Amino acid sequence: MSGMSGRIYGKVDSEVLNRLMETLGEGNVKTDVVERYAYSTDASLFSSLPEVVVTPKNTSQVVEVIRIASEKRIPVTPRGGGTGLCGGAVPVHGGIVIDLSGMSRILEVDLDNFCVTVEAGITPERLNKELAKHGFFFPPSPGSKKMCTIGGMIATNAGGMHAVKYGVTRNFVLGLKVVIPPGEVLSLGGKVLKRCLGYDLIQLIVGSEGTLGVVTEAILRILPLPERSAVVVAYFKDGASAAKAVNAVLRQVIPSAIEILDERSIEAVNRYVPSLNLPKAGAVLYFEIDGSEQEVERQLEVIIDACRTHGGETEWTSDPKEKERLLAGREIVGGAIMNVDRRRVRVYEAEDVCVPLAQLPRFIEEVHRISERYGIPVCIYGHAGDGNCHSGIMIDPTSQEEWEKMRAMAREIYELAVRLGGNISGEHGIGLLRADYMESIHGSSLRIMRKIKEAFDPQGILNPGKMSL
Ligand SMILES: Cc1cc2nc3c(=O)[nH]c(=O)nc-3n(C[C@H](O)[C@H](O)[C@H](O)COP(=O)(O)OP(=O)(O)OC[C@H]3O[C@@H](n4cnc5c(N)ncnc54)[C@H](O)[C@@H]3O)c2cc1C
Image (cartoon, rainbow, N blue to C red):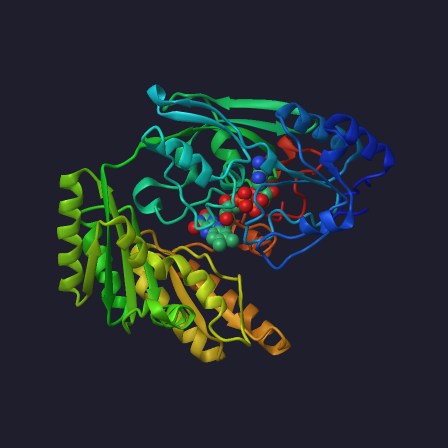
């Protein structure tokens, strides 16, 4: 079989299957078409059937799978929770999907060194439940935290709502165990917080979307749980006033989350769950704050004052149940915009651009203009504290014309973000969805990326077809 990059790949034949079964046990090698179908897609619109799915239980088994794949030049696609939004875990060249979700043990909680060692398949939610018993937490918190895995988060450098204060996944990775072709284990880093030891391969693996190696274990930095937390919600007449309030807040304090919903997103939430009854507004901001008693008091004062100064109407609470109620609009907005209009579906394209903070109001305004010009509704919501906006373009999937318009709109939104000094993906990644943009956004540094890829994976068997490598 010939790959998109012109490479010739081997097939999974009976000899390969027998060797996989010997290594992993029959129950961990899935060839049934129904089971394979479940692994043919992720949370994107892409799909392609793998020839076989394997579910290893330890690093040695992953090593054996990579060894067999290397010998036969069979493509290998690592997979965690399959929540990726850009086709990263879709096996476009068939071959072997390695499902890491069964490797989900916590190997060590080391509170004295503020770190935890985990297998790649654990979800951040389960990790945080365990850590909470010790009074600690792992801050990166994507909206998919119940389903995605730490391995997937590392591979996509996942962000989420709390990046504004705590940073993204890469800021918490101290060490990694990574399997690379032709079956070698790299043990990178350790429990130390600082290192200056040549090229940082850990940070190279973070965000590499399964194209350089299979992450099987990670040492992650953890923090003590904050003493107190609270939520402030503020409604504004327009996005520009909300953005000014964000700027005024960030000059004084750093909340753990600052999220925004535009007018159309607010309407979508109200239509989806009418009982929430969010006030009619041009934009709403959700602030999460945490810290010591005094820090939370100070942040509350600053945020409420800044929002009121810019015309915002505020509500706040530190009661856990009330916090859930106040944050509900932000929690459900993804589902809500899927149901804005029964004839329309949300397409994940241009859904993750990141712009410099000062450009956020202009970005929102211009996307609304693009939406009007094409006659296709767009809801905008996302992480106002770091400029990472999720635009939900909603089209009639039966209309070829709307698909074409959507692609043209997406291109305009990407170009707009770049023109404003931003980028085409803040946290979801490249995968298949944005692979065609790699050349134009990276220019000659794509050549260096391709050389790095070759150094790790000379046969090009690891997640081929992704990131235009
Ligand atoms: C409802 C929803 C909300 C979301 N919210 C956020 C958000 O707030 N912030 C955010 O950043 N993302 C978000 N995402 C996107 C997605 O959840 C993240 O990208 C997540 O990190 C993917 O993890 P996963 O385990 O599902 O990975 P998968 O989808 O299985 O894989 C993603 C990529 O990582 C690679 N990979 C997976 N595991 C490994 C491994 N062990 N070793 C090497 N490569 C591996 C795959 O090959 C693929 O390229 C959201 C998605 C959904 C559906």
